[in-house]
Picture 1 (cartoon, rainbow, N blue to C red):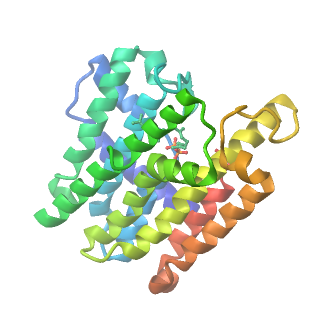
Picture 2 (picture 1 turned 180 degrees about the vertical axis):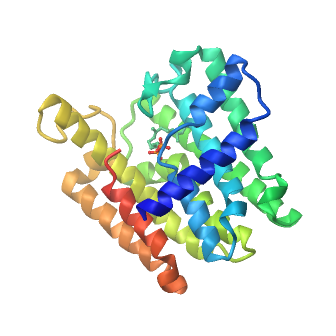
Amino acid sequence: MQDRMEQCRDAVQQCLNDALAPLGERPVEVAMRYALGGGKRLRAFLVMEGAQLHGIAPAQSVWAAAAIESIHAYSLVHDDLPCMDDDDVRRGQPTVHKRWDDATAVLVGDALQTLAFDLLTRPELGASSQIRVDLIASLAKSSGIGGMVLGQAQDIAAETAMIPLDLAAITELQANKTGALIEWSARAGAILGGADPTALGHYAKAVGLAFQIQDDILDVEGDAAKTGKAVGKDADAGKATFVSLLGLTGAKTRARDLVDEACAALSHYGTRADGLRDVARFVISRET
Ligand code: GRG
């Protein structure tokens, strides 16, 4: 799978380079390229693997893969702003507002968001008008107030009110905040192939939740490694996470169960979906 992920990373980067080639060297344009660089390209890989299952060539699906990475990059740039998470480092580099300024970071996020929809209109995607409309409408819902933006707002509201969330509330919040884009990524391949995306949607719901649980596990294990404290002690004190609610062992078990559920949802595809099963396992074994 590592080889295929690397091929996907290269193809997506080339596609983004092509899409950005007409841009100039204004700070916002340079910062857009900067924000799009790096990352695991997990969402792109889901798009391209799902598309391949439905007979869509990588040269086509890479445009949808680049679109979701553009939305994802926008969300990270805005999430890092001082008015949100106030982070200084992203993908091992200074965040966009640190390297430039807040106004540039807001504009970069805005421009990356609209770029995503532009990419779905490109002729190289080779899709019918109806399929393009389906992809654009579902991406608008998943990234906007029907998905990611709603999840971010729920997160901010919970933090502002200092209300500790229960398991149902945190599951719903994360399904919106990070799950919606992961779900769109997996479903996009079936939509591109004119097929029913339900099975890939079930797979992605489980993978999205496992991804977030692993994120919480990495947070506490990373903090413990840095501070030398026992795992789980003082990690993001006061904030409910899957680890604080389930315990570290419980969170790991839940993540493994979700990966099993995700793999089972692909039964209809047989061994042709082994690449997607590998991604599900990768999500809970990743260390970044
Ligand atoms: C600002 C509207 C708005 C939304 C932001 C998704 C999100 C909502 C914020 C991200 C905050 C965050 C770091 C959440 C943890 C899970 C996550 C999305 C991690 C980053 O995704 P990876 O690991 O990143 O796929 P790379 O860099 O590999 O692409």
